[in-house]
Length: 110
Ligand SMILES: [Zn+2]
Image: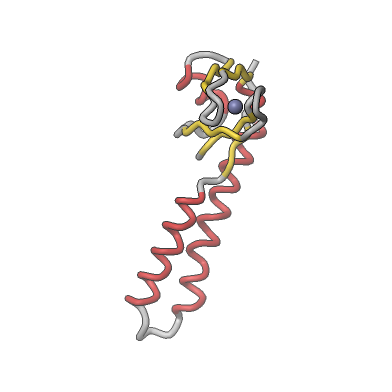
């Protein structure tokens, strides 16, 4: 999952990578309730409270799901139930990602 925030100087979007499932876990991981990160676009340091970071689903995970679906389709080609199964995998992964990000976005730290 990645966390996005906008630079206070150039207003471009920046990302932080995390394995935390909610803001409490991210607070533990980061150690402070306010981030102070350098903008990748202009180099300006932006301070943001953790509650103002916005989690986004990881597109790489979804792409991985599509790849798995293709492999499954090829492997199970002879069985005939491929179309349903291979469509279910990326949708399932996408729903799981959405659930995780909404869980993160709903959690608030002090
Ligand atoms: Zn910037």
